[in-house]
Amino acid sequence: MESENKTRIQDDLYEYVNGEWLSKAVIPDDKPSVGGFADLDTGVEKILMGDFKAMKDGTLEIPNKYLEDAIKLYSKGLDVKRRNKEGFLPLKKSLKKIASIKTMRRFNSSLLELVLADYPLPVKVGVQPDMKNTLVNSFIFTGPDTILPDTTYYAEGNKTGEALLGIWKTMAAKLLAFSPLSEEEQKQYLEDTMAFDKLIAPIVKSQEEWADYVKCYNPMPLDVVAKKLKGFDIKGLLASLYGDKIPTTIIAYDPKFTKNFKKMFNRATYPLYQHWAYTKFIVSSSSLLSEEIRTIGGTYRRALSGIAVDASIEKQAYRAASNVYSEPLGIYYGKKYFGEEAKKDVVEMVKEIIATYKKRMSENSFLEEKTKEKAILKLDKIVIKMGYPEVPSKKYEALSINDKDSFYEAMSLIDVERNEYDLKTLNEPVVREDWVMPGHMVNACYNPYSNDITFPAAILQAPFYSLKQSRSENLGGIGTVIGHEISHAFDNNGAQCDENGNLANWWSKEDFKAFKKATKKMIKEFDGIPFHGGKVNGAFVVSENIADNGGMAVTLDIMSKMADPDYEAYFINFAKLWCMKAREQYMQLLLSVDVHSPAELRANMQPRNFDEWYKTFKVKKTDKMYLVPSKRVHIW
Ligand SMILES: [Zn+2]
Image (cartoon, rainbow, N blue to C red; front, top):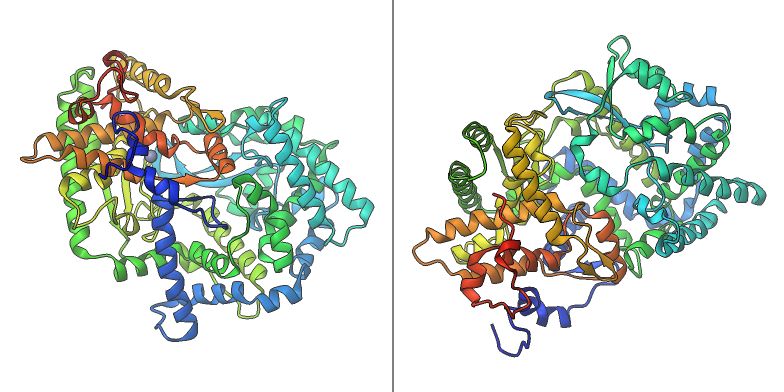
C-alpha cells in the first residue's frame, strides 16, 4: 500500500485500505451509496441493460420465452409516451372497484380478490415452509406494514420519524389530488390514513423483533385465529382459496399483532382502514404511472435514503422486468458471463471450508459429543447452490403478459398471477430445488429451512473472487463470505434448526447455555457503538456478526495450513469487500432496518477478535484496533 495514506492500519483497517477511494468517490444522484457490493451491482446492471436494449432492438437474439416476456414488460415500462398520455387513468378502474367496497360485509366477500391484487389489507397472508416440518407448506399471517420503516420511528420525540411522516403525508396529498375524490374527501382520506397508521405501529413487531425469526413460529388452531381476527373473515378467505382442503392450523408470525388485532380493526375503525388502504394503494402504484406521478410518488423513498433523483425510466423498466423474471435472467447471465472454471474452483473452496468447519466442530471445547455429532451431520447435509440453477423454477409458468396492457396493468396482472401461484402451493410439497437468489444478484445466502447455501454467479467477481487473485486474497474475499453463510447454520437462529432445516433442539442444556453466553458477548461487543448520529443495536445485528466471526475463524484456520499464507493480503482484501460510501440518511436508515452491522464496522470489528490480526500487523495496546484478550469473541 502506498504511504500517502496517513492512517495506520493498526488504528483503522477500513480507512487504511479504502481511505483514498472514499475521499474521491462520488455517489451517483440516483443512488444511496457507492462502493463494494453496490459497484458490482451497477456493473452487472449495465451489462444486462445493454443486452436488454439489444434484444428489444433486435440486434441480440432473445434466448427463450421468459426473456421474451421480460422484454415485453421492459418495453411497456419504457413507453413513456403512453405512460404520460394515460397519466392516472390506468389506476382509475382499480380504484372504482375499491371505492365500491363500503361495508365490512362487502369487504369480506371481496377478500380473495383483494389479496390477489396485493391490496393493502389489515392482515397480510402467505404460504411458507412449516418451520417444524419444512417439507410441507403452511399458511401464515401477520400485520400490515407501517408507513415508517420501523416501529421505533414512532417513539415519542423521534424527530426523524416525525419529519418523514410529514414528507409522506405531503406526498400522499399530492397523489390523492389525481384521484376522483373531491378536495374535502381527499383531506378526510389523508387524516384517516395517518390515524390508521398510528393504530398499527404499537401492535406490530419492530425490526429487532423480526430478526429473531424462530419466534415467528406460533401455530394456532384456525378456530382460535378466526375469533382473534374478528371482522376479517379468514375462514372465508381460506375456503375460497382451498375449498375443502382448508388448513385447520395456521401460523401467527406476529403474536402481539394477533392479540391486539381488534384494537386496530373493528367496526369503528373500518372507515379509517378503508381510507388508509385507498391512499396506500395509490402511493404504491404511483411509480408505474406517468413521469409526473412517478416523481411525486418517489418523494418519500428519496428522502428516506437521501437520494436526489429517481432512477431513469430506462433503469426502472429494466429493474421491473429483471425483478419479475429474475431466475431466467440469472441463468442467462450466468451462462453468458460466468466461467465454468471459476464455478469448479469455488465449489472446491466451499467443500474445503465445510471440511474445515467439521474439523473445528469436532475440536470444539464447549459442545458435548452428541451435539458435535449433530453439528457435523448438519454440515454434511448442506446443499450447495453455485452460480445459477439449471432450469428456472416452475413458478414462471404462471406468468403472462397481455400485449395491449399498459405498464401498470401488466404489473398488476403479474401480481395476481404470482400471488395465486404462491398461495396455491399450500397443499403441495415444498420445492427445495428453487433458488432464493438469481444468478445476476451480487449477494449470497443461507436458507435455514432447507439447510442450503446460494452463491449467485454475480458475486464471484473481484474483490470477492478472481482466478487472478492470490489464494490468500480469495480467502479474505469470497472465503469469508462462504464461511459467513455456513456459520448462519449455527447463529442464534440457525442453531435452532436441525440438518433438515426443521425447528428442533439438538443441543444439551449445558452447551446451549455456553453458546448463549458467547452470543451475549458478541451483542456486547457491538452494542452502542456510535455510528453516523445513531448507535448500533447489538441484539439486532447479532446473527450476522456471529456469521462474520465464524467466516473469519474458518478461513484463518485454512490460512494456517497453507505453505505460504499472506495474511496481509487476506486482511486487506477483506476490508476491500466492505468499502462503501453512503448518504447520511441512508446510513441512518440501515442502522434501523439492516440486520447487518454497518459495512465499516464489519471490516474493523471482527479482525480484532483474532490473534492473526495482532501478529500480522504487530498491533499493540496503544493502537485503536486493539482489544484486550478477555473481550475477544470466538464462537465457532
Ligand atoms: Zn448473513
